[in-house]
Structures are given as C-alpha cells and as structure tokens.
Length: 70
Image (tube, rainbow, N blue to C red; front, side, top):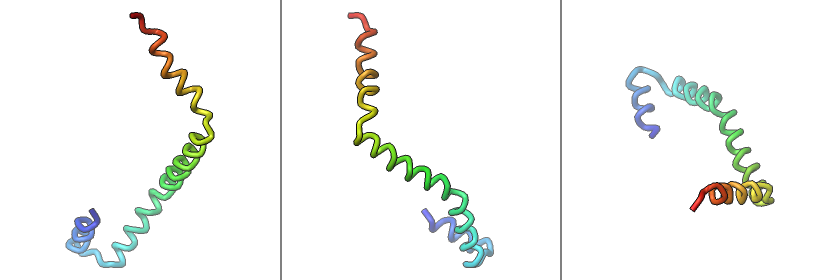
C-alpha cells in the first residue's frame, strides 16, 4: 500500500527528504480526524457499557412490531 507511492515519488525525482515532508504533511492533514475517531470509539464504548442507549434501542426494536398489522 505504501510501496507504489514511494516508488512513484522516487521515479519522479523526489528524494527521501521530499518524501519525508510529504509524509509529515499527510499526517498533519488527518491527525485531527484520527484523534476525534479514537475519542468517539472510546466515548461511545464507555456509554454502551454504562447502558444509556438500552431503552432507546429497545423502543426502536418494539416500534416496528407495534405498527405492523397481522
């Protein structure tokens, strides 16, 4: 997955310093999203363990059964 861009950069004349700069810029551009994603996984994992979603989920499961007519 990283071999093709690395080879492409070397073929087009970019040196290891340029490739390092590209890598750093790429990390800078996605780091905020990565931090938010990790926070969301941890936060909602804790909330799921605590259980505030359980009543909402049970209500959503019961709602289609209550509205369907046999």
